[in-house]
Image (cartoon, rainbow, N blue to C red; front, side, top):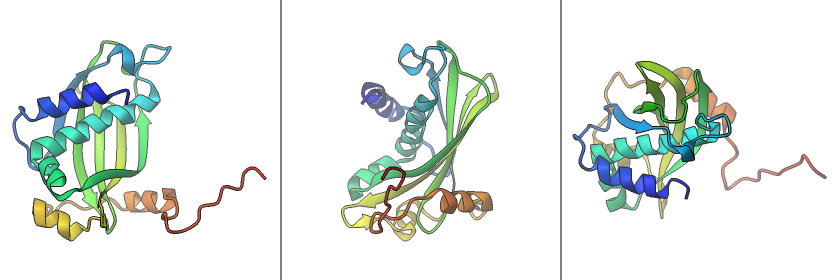
Length: 182
């Protein structure tokens, strides 16, 4: 909820930006606001992922995928994220969120996103997401029927496959008991 108005603003703004293909890279210019920072006056580590949502929304809206998702009743669900930080983005700093799809596996879509300022990467994240509908997960075949086939050179790095497998929790149809406290 803390980014609701900002998200709505950027969804509206993205509709007026130049169109992109779904396989292109989105670049969303932003500024570090007082609501983004912690006591050290730089972006709070948890806020990076919330801001990166804006970058993925920008790519989806500008490529027309947002319209496809709404028409088909598809909703994006994040299943895993990992991030590395290099430098802090301080209050008032201008930066861009660069977002692109880097591949697929049988269950998920993978994004790479970067926070860039002055031509340098400040943070980089990898996000594993899938589309779901009332019928359940949306298959790659359904997605590709709407977007076209991905470029032939869009090959997911092997370490991303391993990361997803090693990082994932059991499906919601299997138990995942919590055993720390007895």
